[in-house]
Length: 242
Image 1: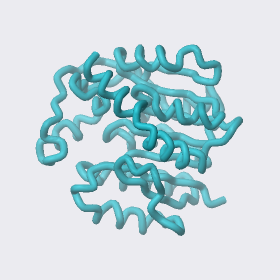
Image 2: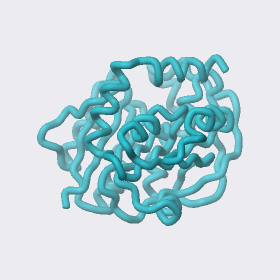
Image 3: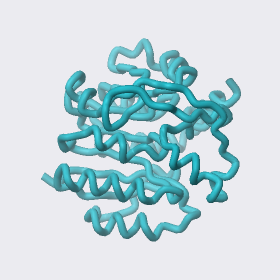
Image 4: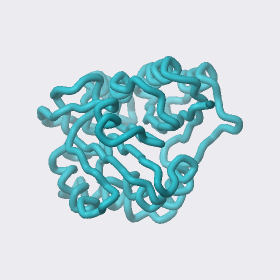
């Protein structure tokens, strides 16, 4: 459990990070709203949404990590926990497990193949592959209702997750990396096809939006294309303009 202990230390014991995260999430999540946490890991975003008064649906496909998630949030009435991956269609997929750093376990073979090319990722190793069930955002919406906010952090599989969404939602975020800039660009294209979205960006663990006013799709794609490699990762936020 050493790797999970590191996750708990990172995501639950940094009070300043938690305060920044809550302040950012409060722009999208309020009491009585519904939030989806896709790629919940040990549930720090779920915890933030719950503190803000939301009802949550949280997905995590890794069996060991899901057990930890259930220990933390399994008795919370406003939290629904689902042991599943997310994708373009229901079924099963192969999940690449990083036992030393479960937070970067991924369904993206492309990410695993690209990792050795980046200094920021060269020390990551995926040492196992397991079959996990897959659901879609549309299926979750049919079951639980349309969310006010969706957070998607699925390690290079974000574009596949958005293929399973056929209606616009009020707001969402998806992780981006400079290792796979194309994934972020595909996500923006998908959202642009669903509705009139505007965009913003938070880098690393800043948990703060960088742009005022918000950006167009073209502006956001240009920023993602030109981000320095050292930026490594962040989240794109999208909100409907009408």
